[in-house]
Image 1 (cartoon, rainbow, N blue to C red):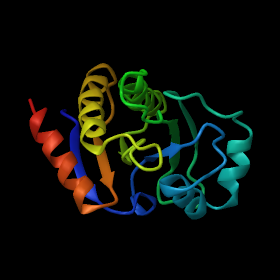
Image 2 (spheres, rainbow, N blue to C red):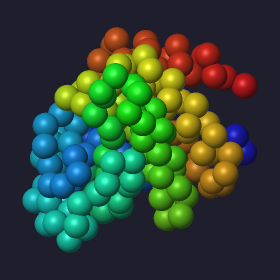
Image 3 (spheres, helix red, strand yellow):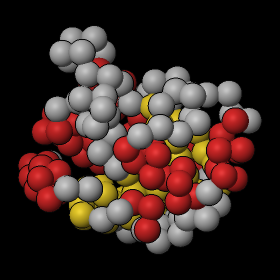
Image 4 (cartoon, rainbow, N blue to C red):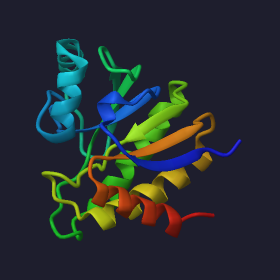
Length: 172
């Protein structure tokens, strides 16, 4: 069965999927943007669980329970800060998506939703980030069976349009 990959405009904290991905900072202790929203919606139990993880390196991912979220799990990944694109940012961003897919597959997660990793305060250009995200997810799904649906959850209409274009550009 082919995995469904789609983009939608929504609040990621409200999605009923097996796991949502958090665009976290390296401490995993909450922050602004989607990270802060996920921590607020999940409740203080998420912060307590994250404290036990010892942080997370850029490009890596770690799993927690979803606590008060509709999603059963949260996959926390730390994206790169944009510094012009010649400092390994595309590879690190791709690693975020690849490691998240691998973690999902290893834990029996069939449906997951990604935010626009690194495009907020980390300033990764949205169009470039979307291309990396879509290309990497398609590739990672080939190597990780069991995932039935991947959603790129966009907070703005502009980001939704960017992801829809990226999905169409890489459609097979």
